[in-house]
Length: 270
Image 1 (cartoon, rainbow, N blue to C red):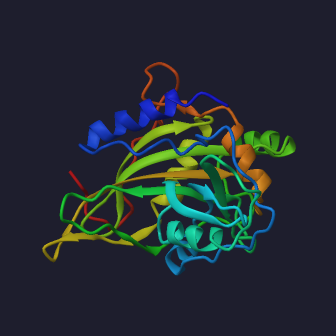
Image 2 (image 1 turned 180 degrees about the vertical axis):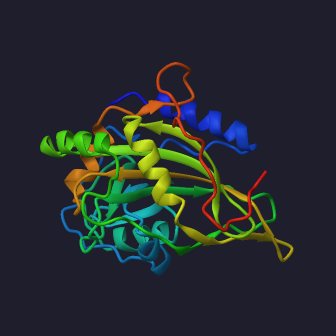
């Protein structure tokens, strides 16, 4: 199992910057997963499909003598309604009876997606008493999905060995629903940072609200660049790859050389 300390530390770093409790690591925390003897594909929630969210929900529970799971609990969520869908699907799966608690992975995939960019995780941290933002407009570029020559070269290399690039970003969804104040949590290579930010800057959200008034809400997401069509094997490989470099660790990587600005027409967030 790969080390997890670096991304946990970087999440703490960003959480401290926005005054929030850190989210758990997005990486696979389980060295042993119980494979079902019979499974059905989980259903997607509308909001997760609209956002283009893919990835794995991890569950823990027990297996009865007849192979049915029970007392299922989400131990590593994806959100946007997929956690509930994962429990619903896993209840219909069948396993080899086990005397001890088990860990179960439920994968969510969008095989019709035509972009090499994939949203793997998202976590909003609304202030107490506030609602979280919801996805209003998302955009994932087609084709190679990158602009810079360096990213094209790096993409050619990692695609040839069937690897993926990853970027974890923190930002605020401000009162008008635009993403602002980007911070780089971690990245597999600095070349992917500006590419990822350029994509997310074009997203729009219905803002969070408290007492009927729009409020700014921090968010952390992980984007992956690689194959257009992900599989369960691809998700497992992503979880097993070395962790991205944490930008919180001074001297490991430089932040983007150009300052990140709000999209044109968006009120600046100071």
